[in-house]
Each structure stands twice: as structure tokens, then as C-alpha cells.
Image (cartoon, rainbow, N blue to C red; front, side):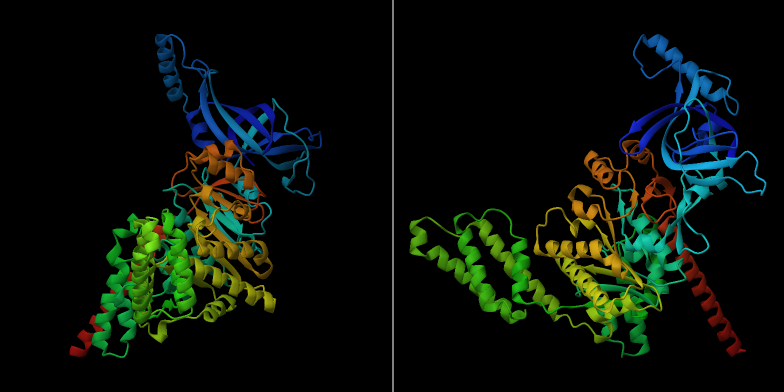
Length: 634
């Protein structure tokens, strides 16, 4: 139950507004102990409920650890010669005490928080039952011996409320301090009551998210899981290429044609050509597709090795396109969202002109003719305004800012007209009802990565799909299969302050899913580094949090208020390496609302393993072809 030859003393207990209590414990210093005790370690201390028949140990979790030397204390003030000599002596004490503590001047100081659990050990157990874990019944006793739980007991505590045989679980990672302690998550609670991933630049949010998605899709065998990722930065094609290839319903959905190279559309447009021409088109499309895919450094070096799986993906026609007929009114709204600066005295007249323009042409589809017409009307408006005698008298004219904003209207219309001219083959288009049909299909898991050239279009699509999927479930009363709508760069979809109509619509749709989607098996996942820009109401919705380094105090405070993570807990994240995360959940983990530091798999390695397997398969296929060729010659 305990690690042998390692014990400490509970020195201090004090109240804490977030964790209820905060404990200080001392262990005798040895280098072995420093390498054994770490953040996330579970400790056991006898509590006041113990008696002669049984011993009850309160279970604590270490949140901070620091070696201390009495000769140095906590202050480096004083005569420099004395302080320097004391430091040299301390340095020797750290080295000489390898496995045996021989100096009273050295200690290991630990800070711990309660898990609200206890181990009950019977003095005599006639039926041979071992120690039992239950809710804590009293406070630990100051001055009593502290024990470090071993691997088996720590794993029992970490997964306490989980049924490893019956629950639908995924293995998300292992404790940072002990890779043999596996940590699991309940799939249903993870998805239905939402999750959030929060970390600063370089923490590995995309890597963790793709690992989480891969495990949901590959480890859950008892029921289908549906994942929709709204990929603002187009990062997940490379990180989840294996799932896109291996799943029958693994799709990239492009909003319009501008998100993919023209050679890809050419390949799909000319499938009726000869085999030689198709092969050449596929080769060009594959190279362009891989070259335009955003890859982390670890995969960028192996970019040519991605050609084979990428070609398989394209050949399976899993690159799909969604197009909506855009009208002039939509383009004017988009352009107005991009307006910058103060247009001065002509601002009111510019907005009136746009309103009249919307009345005349708003419902018309966008093509070259309508663009030419509106461009001429804009020029006429500017000329008439500048030549108007009343305006000349008042010294009013179109300002440079107003000119730039009116040019933006024509630019957006031109861009929309060019996009609408791209002829996307019917065999790779997709409709909203078809996507909803994938999400409601109970026979298999699905991965849908949605990307767009224009962020506003991606937000509008996210809002439409969220509402359509929700209404489909609400009307039919359907609750399965589980669907997670994941918003990467979530502050762009759910901002605290909406700066455009598309942000308002996506924010409202996400809040609908967050508050009412769980009744119908619909959940959300949010990932961001800009917590300060995120809507506070949405931030409070997830019941499962993955937190890494957050240097900004405001971000830490926002998470602390949403989940109740103390400063002591945050402090350990500053020492995290890539792949280390502070995991806390009200429902999905075995420990309710208790943050534990875990280490997760590297998504890059999973893709590299997949690529190598594909290369081996290709080599074996090539060898088989050559063997057949040699046999035919014989």
C-alpha cells in the first residue's frame, strides 16, 4: 500500500478558501526521495477518526515540492562570505545523502491539498479484505507520520469512481510522477458535459486535442463517437491524417473552393479521363495538398512520406465541399464588418448609400455582371458626392477612409464572384442534411474537419450546423450517437465581445449546445490560449479541464473562478514539459474536481507510426508486383 523506506511528518494545517485545507509536510532529504516524490503524488496520514480497531488515513495530493537547507534558510541576506560558505556546504549535503539521510539540516518540504478521501485499514480482517477507500471522515493529525502511496494504490485512488470493466473509457495518459499509473476518462461525461483545453503558446494544445480525438475514435468500441472540428487555422489535417484515411466517415469539409489547391478540384473534375491522366492528376493534387497542409516541425521533416496516405484520402473522395449561394446583402454585411477608422462627415451618407444599395440588389446572386454594376454605382456615388454644390460649400468630400471602405465592398463582391465561378464536381459536394445524417448514423464513428478561407464563413457554417443538428435531435428525441463539436481558437467563435455578425451567431449557437445539447447527446469542446477574450459564460460550461502553462494572471484567475483551481495547483504547471497537463473534472475522471498532473501521448509519433506502416505496406505491395512480373517472364 505504501512505498517502503520513505516517510515524513505532517507539520502544519491551515484553512484554504478554494481547497478547504492546505497542508505542509516534511520528509528527510535524500536524492532518492527527491526523485520519488513529485507533484501529483498521493500521501496518506492517520486522521482523528482512527481507533484501536482500524486506522483511517486521509489521502492528500502533493502540489508543490522544494528541498530546503537550514543553513541557508529562506533569505540570502547577510555577510556574503558566510552565505557563500553555507551554500557550498549545502551543496555537499545534497550530494552525499544519496539513499540515506544523515543530516538534520536538510529536509524536503511539500505542500499538499486534500482529496476528501481516506483509506480504512482494519487492525484484524477475518475475511481477508484489503484496505477500503471511502469519503474522508475527519482531519489528518499534525505530527503524525506521512506515507507515500505505491503505484497500485495510487491508481486505485486516481480511478476510484470508474468501473474499468463496465464503463466506456479512454486512457488519456499517466501521472507525471509515475508513468505506471494510468488515468482514464468516462467518454459520455467527457463529451456531453463538455471539455476545455487551455494553455499558452507552445504548450501543445493542438497535439493534446488530436490525441484526445484519436483516442475517442480508436479506443471506443462499444458505441460510435462523432467528432466535428471547426479548424480555423487548418492544423488538424496533418495531425489526424491517420483517422481521416482509416475511418469510412473521415472527411474534410471545405467551405467553398478557396481552401484547397486547384489541382485537387481538377482531379475530381476529370475522373472520366484515361487511367494515365487520372494518375498524373492525382499525383499533382497529392503533392499540392500535402504542401499546403499545416504541419508541426516533427512532421514537416517527413512531409514526402505523407504523400501515400494523402493520395489514398483523395482517392476515397473524402475531400468534400459545401457551397452556399451568396447574395449581395451577405457581401455588404461582410464588408461592413471590415470597415476601419472614422469616415468623418461623409460617414452617415456612406451608410445611407449602402442601405439603398442593399435594397436595390441585396437579394441578387453574385456574379461578374452584378459586381460591374455595383462598382459603377460606387464610382457614381463618389463623383456625385464630391461634385454636389452643397457639399462643396460645406467643404465635405469623400475621405480616404471612406474611399477605402467602399473599395472593400467591391473587393468582397469580386472575391465572392470569383469563388462562385469555380465549378465543383457534384461527386464531392456535401449538403447540410448529409452532414447531419453522418452525425446521426449509429453504425460507425465519424470525424469531420471543417475549414474555410474566410473566418466569417466558418463561423456562419458552425452556427448553421450546430442549430440544424440540435433541432434534428430535439424534434426526433434522439440522444445517440454522442457528438462533440470542437472549436479550436475558441475565442474567435465565442468571444467575450462580438465584433461581427458571424461572431454573434456562432456565439449564440455554441451557448445553445453548451446549455441544452447534453439532453440530446451533443457536447462542445473548446481550445484556446486567449482566455481573457473568451465569453465568461461559456468558460463556466465545461466540466472537464486540461490546463497547462498560463503566464498571465488574468487567465489563471478566470480558470480558478470557473473551476476552483488554487494558486498552489497552478504553480506546478510552470514546470510542465510538453505533454504535461493538469486534468480536472467534475464527472469524467475517477476523482471528482481534484486536479491531477498527467502526461499524454505525442500525436506526432502516432502519425509517424502510421506513415511508416503505410510505407511498409507500399514496399510490400511493390515487391509483390515485381515478383509477379518476374514469374510472368519465366
